[in-house]
Length: 525
Image 1 (cartoon, helix red, strand yellow):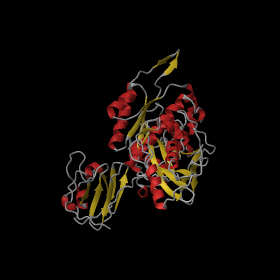
Image 2: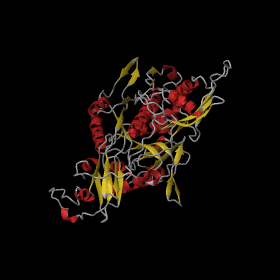
Image 3: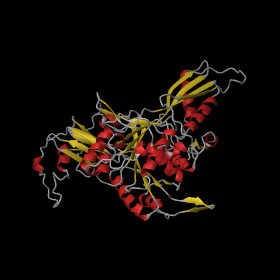
Image 4: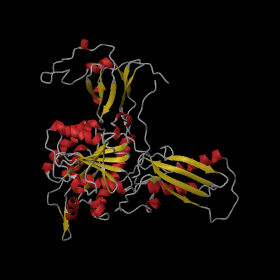
């Protein structure tokens, strides 16, 4: 039996949001950091199909001393040893062990070395630093005459690729921006975060999940303001604005929806899963207010990578936001940052807090969310939202753009960390007639009898919701029952289809409490 484990993706990460705390082999990256762009960036909406490369000839002007001939194998080992000096700043692992180094080619006669550094995302905040240090350490080898470094990024792929709807199989990270309260600037944060990530070099899409009051058509100005259908594939073709793909019910020609909750959930599911998103590094979902059917549908349809929480300084905003944080926690979606909007304004040389202080920091402290970002009260931020040009595009050097750049770096960093964690893998081994469960962030792996899993269903069909009385009896389930399909539901459960047509939702936490099979033979392919 081949043990299934989620692949360990290559990673690009930073230790501080401004990417200045990175270290190489215990030495400061200060020299490399000086080559980084300033804090406030200028968005560069570029084509992502081409890799970037640089080359240097370290000894072109040096005296032509004879170079001792080295074998190709020894030369490659020298290069890899030199590159292993470059340490990933978050986890202390060198870039060779991380698997970043690809296509290494050494020409011992000419002293030329070329290789590719493949990162997980084009938006890697320290990619310039890695490139510079890679050039330096290889060029320092005595027999090397020329170094060519090519920078690239992995193809977009989610953790559960083949088990997702076709439209989502080439999206690496799905980030929800949520507030659970209307009017706090959630859509403003979602749109500006998306264009910040695009400005950092990532392939980005925005999904406006608010059917009742879509904001995206107001906040961006694409030339084509209507979604198109692919009649052959029966899929939706998103519209685009400045390289970012856009989908909103407001672009469907229907305006705002007037329909009941179950219908809305179906519309959201169709818009999200049948869209031809293509390869995306980040899909930013502008979540609607609340914690109801739509939010639960989104968390069940796709495995959200992370969530960004938006709030305002008032206590009332904190109360509603806390509900959303608890919902994400229950559904195993990590909240990676809190954005406190409309915090303050500056006048007469002083900073004023008209709505008080503390809501954002209270969320951070109470729920352990690692990062807090404050947005000031700026008339330009409001105007840009109404004009159809995001603030980070209209004023890329401003204070607001700087805050969103820090938020974008944070999101890239946290998503990379989350993807490093091994996801819970639940599969059925037909040869052993057992369900295998691999728990994330641990070596815990165990097997369950299919009948045990089916008998432990806690849905309304198996247990009376009012009395708690067991409706499904032990003898109702045959011992030889086998699941027909197992697929993930978000980050918190799997959906198991049984031969009688019943679809069981089995949370990972519940699977860990069931009676396990012991003395299961491990078969190696």
